[in-house]
Image 1 (spheres, rainbow, N blue to C red):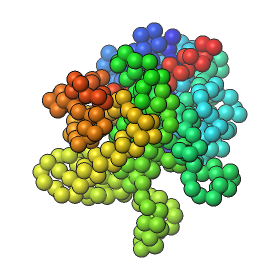
Image 2 (cartoon, rainbow, N blue to C red):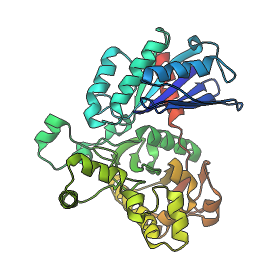
Image 3 (spheres, rainbow, N blue to C red):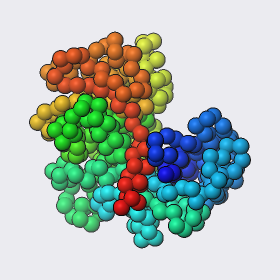
Image 4 (cartoon, one colour):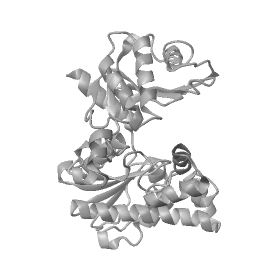
Length: 399
């Protein structure tokens, strides 16, 4: 059984075609620069590629190209789209409307589009992609939507509410939603399996670290709190995002720069974080290299990141009344031994003791990096959101 997994952005359409018999990826690619000019990059499991400029006025043309490269030419992997059993879509924001995957209907697409105000960069693009996919694939092929926010819907009100007037929640749905939920759900389940434990018996702090980062408390397989909030801007500092900031500092800086609300949002989302602190780059690899050479601002950015993660580990240990394991995932979490070492230093009170040599050797693979006898286990767990979306899709259509 073949599942096509789609992750649509405002100007991109990433995809993977997965054979669910062995969960292998037959092909993957990206149709990007939609609405600008257009480019497709496509690669098969056996190394065949397509790399070409295209004309993508809308997501529909991008989907047509996706179908073309999958079914025709030297890098084709299927003969027709009728060989695909279903399409699974990643959706960023489901709010309180969607707490689990569901089949796509015109009403579901409309509701996703209605939530665009809560995720303006993503949800409208998702709706456009869903409509484009519906127009291109066979009518009999089911589509499933999987929501990033769904995993976090188990948070209690005391964790997701803000102390603004309650009417803002009732009228405008202002609350913590959390993001990266598909990743946190995948890696926490993978960790439980690797530990040989029932996830219902585990208290896990999941650290998804990349250009966007979030920390989640997973108690018994359920999210009870997470660092990202109403938007993905909240929490720890990230590539270009500032993370949590005193709200009065926001209004103060906006006034000093004479920013409009939109300009201040851009300032916090695009010009802050690693980039704003270091003045060098938003890429952690470049920050780490500069810090090693003695750049004080780069070192400050590295120290801030580790310190903020440590604070969340401490806070979530308190919230869960204990912790059995801390896991690192995402581009930084899986590949930066330096970040993992900084975070795990001086955490012995929490039972965290890593094997520094093993930590340095571990990159992009499932590996326990804590010392034998460490009360709290520390793991690197590669994430695979596309595979979980494919699994969710298969489970739903099998019903």
